[in-house]
Image (cartoon, rainbow over all chains, first blue to last red; front, side, top):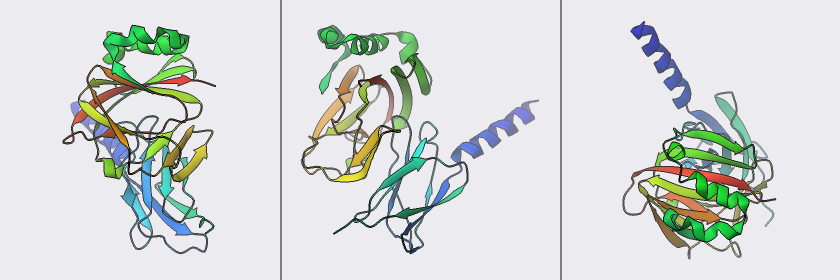
Length: 99
Length: 152
């Protein structure tokens, strides 16, 4: 019984701590490096997670509570945010701001 | 914005019934002892969120505003800095989203800093930019209650 309970706890923890892969691109599909990706709950915003050369950041979704929203920002682009997806990967396209 | 100790909550009774309810909630042991999560008081008009987290550097943060809800932020344990700045002149980072009642602005060079210790609270009205959960001297564990009070 204890083993089953421990396994259930492990599975629950693994589900909570599994990071979301966010790929950030511009409108032409080019990856955006150093975009800031945040996980947000009703009252907390995570630290920024920067995208790499491929435009990818891995964002933990448990920030004291489960994140409700994800926001993406990069200077020169219009920032955005959206509901935390149920999938483990998501692509986001940022629009360049008018100069 | 209001920044004070909960011992002085009665001073703010004239600011409206919902704010009084919010402040009264924080005097309840069951509320302060609550586990992290969201708790409804008057449906979506008044609810509170309990969080436990480690404070983060100011330079990793950004300012946020709400337009529909007021934030009543109360520290149960630990100590944190909340940076604040007037909305005028801030650079919008993520535009306001009405469904999420949230917008973000870049950190401002001339932000003021509130230091909240256990038992202290700050109230942020709609459109008052604030950057909560920041380090005072070194990162520490904080338990906080945020009472969300609908203002519209």
